[in-house]
Amino acid sequence: MRKPIIAGNWKMYKTFDEATEFVEAVRDKIPSEEIVDAVICAPALYLPTLVDIAFETDLAIGAQNMHFENEGAFTGEISPAQLSAVNVDYVIIGHSERREYFNETDEAVNKKVRAAMNHGIVPIICCGETLEEREANQTEQKVEKQVKAALDGFTVEEVEHMVIAYEPIWAIGTGKTATADDANTVCGAIRNVVEELYGRDTSEKIRIQYGGSVKPENIKELLSKEHIDGALVGGASLQVDSYLKLLEAAM
Ligand SMILES: O=C(CO)COP(=O)(O)O
Image (cartoon, rainbow, N blue to C red):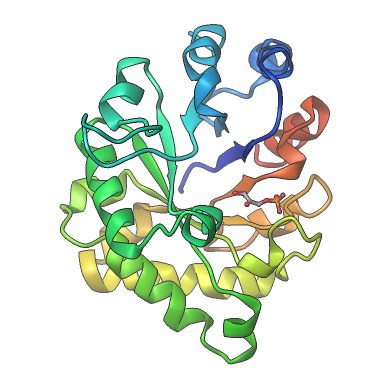
């Protein structure tokens, strides 16, 4: 059995006070990390403070992006070494918003996954198709290409620790969720790619999340599906009540 992983992606929301108040409010209400992995991926500016507030609780803190180099003349960027030095546990890599607005390529995603693994940070690797691609029946082709590129050059042990998030772009922030069956089909196709590359055992261990308008009302059905091991959640992770409900549904 794969342990569910529910990750909030706060994107560019919340002031410092709102972020710290949220983590203070939820930190003692998080289910045991033996049952579910609970993560909040916050704006980089708040990470050290949130890691401190969540210290010795079952809540893990993640970043939403990072550079692949350890250091250098990259104005405005944050490195994997800098994230691991403040004990960040997870990092989202290759979110469709990064790919679309910041020109993140499959090659950069692969380098970032490499960098995350080198620093013991768990990468949440995002993939997903546009509406156009879905309507042209290119969903699996697109996602397979992204996943193959991201996972290129790792060992079996490394891949088992990664998390993949399938987020159809047309379902992000739109209120349109993929049906649980459609989401499961694509997550199953992703698992097949992992099997093809790294073998059955690894494909059974890697966790695959669904993301795109996940809410307390629809998460149970999504998580009941064979290949969906968790959720990457934007809007519904911003309120304490709704975040806790998402975790509850995963128990
Ligand atoms: O992009 C997402 C999470 O990374 C999904 O966002 P929403 O849950 O707001 O649709």
